[in-house]
Image (cartoon, rainbow, N blue to C red; front, side):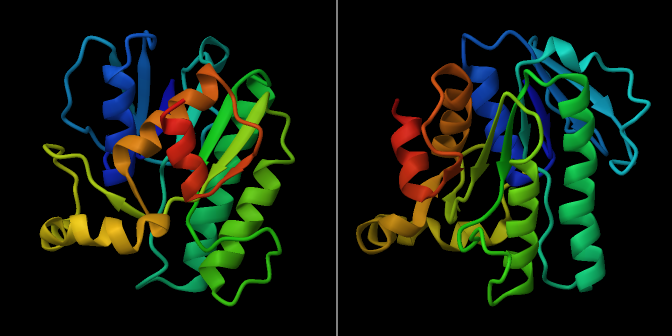
Length: 216
């Protein structure tokens, strides 16, 4: 498996599930900075410029899947920068992977509230929508778009956002009233792994699909 964004909360959680899975022989993480994790199955490449993936010394044909967990919040940055970091960066990496290994399965972490119209109320949703649509046009073996909502973090991981600790005591109640808007980071990781092992009939996975596939 190839994972991007493993120094963030989502990527770290997905990497954690991949390292625990006995069927996965190697996990390659491509990061801008070291993630500090040591594991016999883990291989790490530090690459600062994700807008230039052309010269990476990686044989992409050796990998079955890419879990693209790299992303930024639209808060605090200009629309132009958000488009560059969300659409342009993602498609640059994806096109290289699809060209070099059309048999790869590409899983993209998008977000709840995205639709396929590219005409959503919020700018971030329109950019995510365009990103999803154009990823699904590439020549991957399969491409899956994951739209998680609120993600409950995996305990013990170091990149959990600080503000999640304020939600921990509320989680049992939130699960009762807002279960359709919530999933766990473990469920996301397991669902992504199971797209490779078992596939899924939908290319776009909403929260309910993530929960179903995580248990498959």
